[in-house]
Image 1 (tube, rainbow, N blue to C red):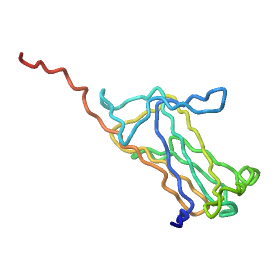
Image 2: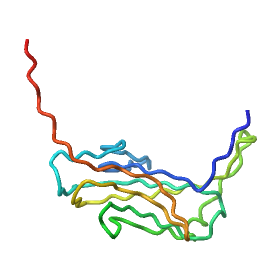
Image 3: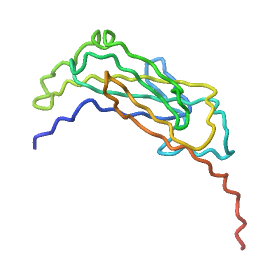
Image 4: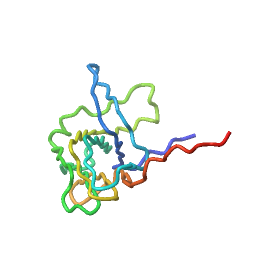
Length: 160
C-alpha cells in the first residue's frame, strides 16, 4: 500500500499547567488538559500558570514568511501571548535527510515548536483559548481549549 503524503502546513497545540525541561532536553507536561478546562471556583479567575506548546509543520522552502504564533482568549481583543519565529532562524535549521530505509516514505517535513509558559493568566469568564500560527496572509488553526465553570461535586451518602 502506498502512503499518502500529508498536506502542509499543519499543526497542533497541547495545553497544560506547566512544562519542565529535563537535562536531556525531554519535555515533561504537568496537568495536561484534554478538550476542556473546568474552573470549579467560578469567574473571574487567575491561573497561577498555563503552558501552551504550539507545533507547526511545513515542507522546506514552502514559505518565505516569518511565523507568528498567537494564543488568544475569547472576549479579549489582544492576544494573551504571541511570538514571532523569523524565517532566517527556520532557514538556518538543517533540512531532513533521506535515510536508506525511508524508501518511498521520505517526506521532508520541518517541524517547529514554541513553548509558552505563562504566569498569572486572568480569565474573566467562560470561553475558549485558541492557538494559531500566521504565515504572511495565511492563518493556521492549531488548537482550541474550552474553558467552563462547574462546581466541584459534593460527596453523596449512599444508604447501607
